Image (tube, rainbow, N blue to C red; front, side):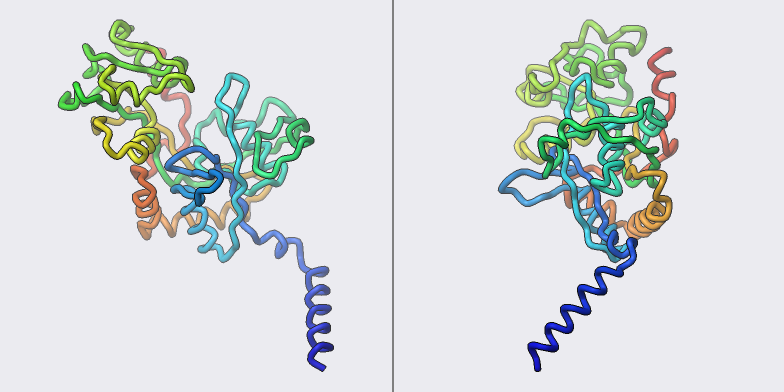
Length: 310
C-alpha cells in the first residue's frame, strides 16, 4: 500500500511540474558575476566562492524568497573587449537575469550599435558557445548599491604627504598604468603639469601596487576596489590610503534587460530595504571592501569628459 501511495505522490508531482506556469519555473534568481574581481567577486577552483557581490546576491535572493544561481564569467581585458556587449550577450542568452557590479554610465547603457555579440568565456561554456553570436537586447539598470571612486595611494616614502587634490602629488614619483582612466586624468591635469613626474607601467605585465609597495614609486591613482584587494592579499603592506577620492566616480548596480521590468522592480525594492537596514554596508565591510554609498549623478554622463577637455 505504501509503495502504491509513494508512486501516486511521484506521479502527482510530475504532473504538477508539467503544468507549472513558466513564471514558477523561472523563480531562481540568476546573477552573472566576474570570477576574478576581488573583493567584489571571486571564483577559483578549490576555494569557496567569496566577495561582496556574492553575499549581496544571496541577500537579495533571500529578500525575494528565491533560490540563487550564480553564473561565473571571465571578462577579457583587451582592446577588443566591451564590458557592455559582454554583459548584454550574457543577459540576452538567458545566462542570467542580472549582471552584478555593473558600472552605471551613460555609455554602458546605450542601445547597442550592433545587433549581435559574442559571449565572454563563462563557466559551463562549450565549443559552440565560444563561436556563436547572440542577438542583443536593451540594458536597464537597477538602482545603484555602491559608489566606486578613484583614490590616490601613497608609497612608504610619501606616506605622510597630505593629499587634498590631484595636484598635491606634484614632485612625487607617480606610477600610472598606460591607457587607464587615471592615466588620462593625471596626464591632462593642469595642462600637463604632472607629466615629468609620471612613469607609465603596462597593465597585466607590471605590478603597479607591488612596485609602489617596494618604494620604487611614491604615488598612484587607481580604483579604490583594487587597493582594497591588494591590502587583503598583502596584510603587511606599507602602502597608505590618502583618504582622497577623485570627485568624479561611478555608481555600481545590477544591469538587466529592459524586457523584464517586473523583476527589476522587485530587485530594486530588495536593494532599498537592504540599504536602509545597513546590510549592504555591513556586507561590504565583511568582504574587505570600502563602502561608499551611491551618489548623484546616479548614471555618470559626460562630466568626466568635460574635466579632461579643460
